[in-house]
Length: 227
Ligand code: C5P
Image 1 (cartoon, helix red, strand yellow):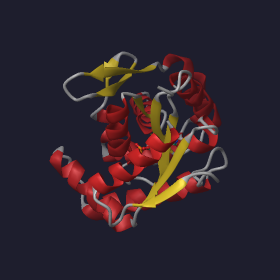
Image 2 (image 1 turned 60 degrees about the vertical axis):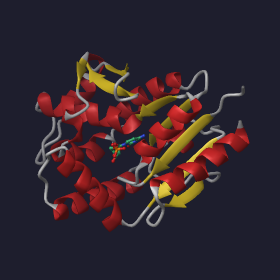
Image 3 (image 1 turned 45 degrees about the vertical axis):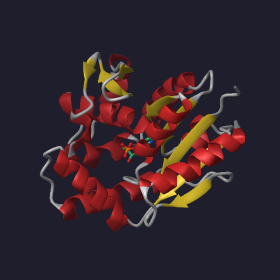
Image 4 (image 1 turned 180 degrees about the vertical axis):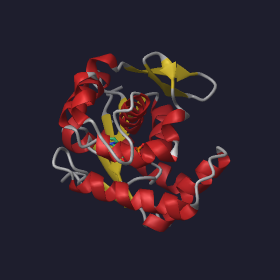
């Protein structure tokens, strides 16, 4: 059966990764969470004291880019691949509010984007991939057969992220989560290199009032029409 490439972009906390995982499972495709890659670079930069809320030693991080090795390993129990930074699993460490506050600064650096985009393109070489992020349909796979752009109101997105963090016992106040969601969207949409924009041929989905199931069925249908 023909395999396609599915690019899922959109605003922060719109449920892109949940949807992408569901699609990858249903179609037996690989799933790549590119946000996790930018987050893992951010974690590395924090660990090396290259970035904090008050400073960012961009040049030092760029000089050390070759020391950052990112990989994904499939976890059979969870049913999706988890991210490793220099062979250490960092799936939980990259989801903290500290990383969320700094990741969009890291994502403005062209040298970092070039490195990660190169790796992302390799994952899609044989198609059969669902990838989510901010520039997948515009930069990583401009020829993807299916491009989705997801959005929802900031309050609804922050509420979902807040509940998700609470489940993981991360006690961040709702207002801080909301502020982070709004600030990240602004930085991601206004940066010079690969800003978050809607690809011309993307299907835009506002899921403020859609259940996960409705959304999944709708997009699976779009995928099947292209296979
Ligand atoms: O998807 P997630 O919210 O985990 O992404 C974290 C951040 O990584 C985004 O807010 C954005 O700054 C950056 N990112 C990016 N390009 C991608 C994926 C994520 O710039 N393809």
